[in-house]
Length: 383
Ligand code: NZQ
Ligand code: ZN
Image 1 (spheres, rainbow, N blue to C red):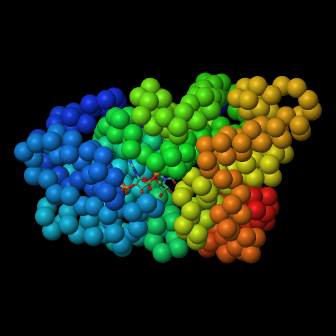
Image 2: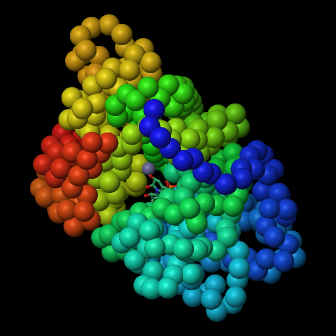
Image 3: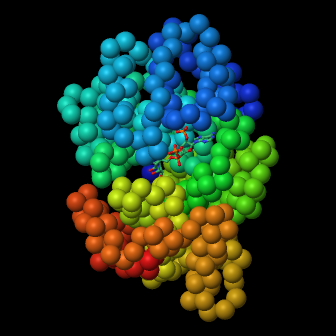
């Protein structure tokens, strides 16, 4: 096992009716800014529950944080906070609203141009406003981690900082009942890929992390189809919400090598072509595993055996079958797994590679050997 420091200060309030606990979770004298996406939190009743729980506190709202949150939008919230001396942020939404809130929390205290937070991937963040979240879309894990992904034009960059862990997150599975099938499928694919980025590298005798990861993957395989088909089934959605949080709250990634090449390539596809985050992962992950099978051989065989019960046949056949099962799982959920399924042809590949180069993403993966040539191979395999 590798050495690690593990730190996660986010309190989780989990279960039906837990939005009411905002009454205790948000400081009584706070001047609150509630941050929202489009209309979903209003139309499904979550916003009404939030307003009721905040009671007599001074509350303003900022809505319009878009999927793949945009820098210019977020800077308008920063201006509102400064102008009205607000001191507590409450994100109500999916990963985009929570990520946007993390950026806003840090940008309020930035000494220089806030976009530098992204260019420096968070190394320059010294302080951030306190914030909590009410999660409405299980997928990113943003509700219990310190990462954030922000877009500006054709740049989609991430930052991490210990300053931007949520103080608390409310996870009420009934608050995601209104999600459409596409977002539910996206959530399953995103969580699945987060686990794979931390699990499917090379063995380091990290037995607990491996077993945790395999348990989370198997849970997603078990419940994934029902997540999409039965959005109002409490137990299914509760398990889904908790798996998605555990997939990226640092627990399974502590003490193990991590990959993240699929995500970095995926972010460029979203930036250039506007695909949903998880759609890009469904495209890139199977191709990534196939192209890098030599580096990942031992873990691919472990994945085949323990997650998909594939123990017969040659090693190569088992690896092929495990990758094929992964692809079929995504497809069954409704997430297409080829660039061509989204009308993106091979002629688009050079510009994706140029973006990777511009963003310094030229030595990706657990061995830092996913060069631009390797990324090209992956994209060709995903065509
Ligand atoms: O804007 P509204 O009206 O709220 O609608 C949203 C949005 O259109 C809708 N939605 C959310 N909750 C709903 C709902 N619709 C009906 N009922 C509900 N209960 O869903 C749509 C997508 O929302 P979004 O927040 O964009 O989705 P997601 O949670 O998948 O977040 C994606 C963003 O997170 C980043 C991605 O890159 C992308 O920008 N990521 C963040 C990570 C992190 N912080 O650790 C890691 C991830 O790998 C990812 O990169
Ligand atoms: Zn992701």
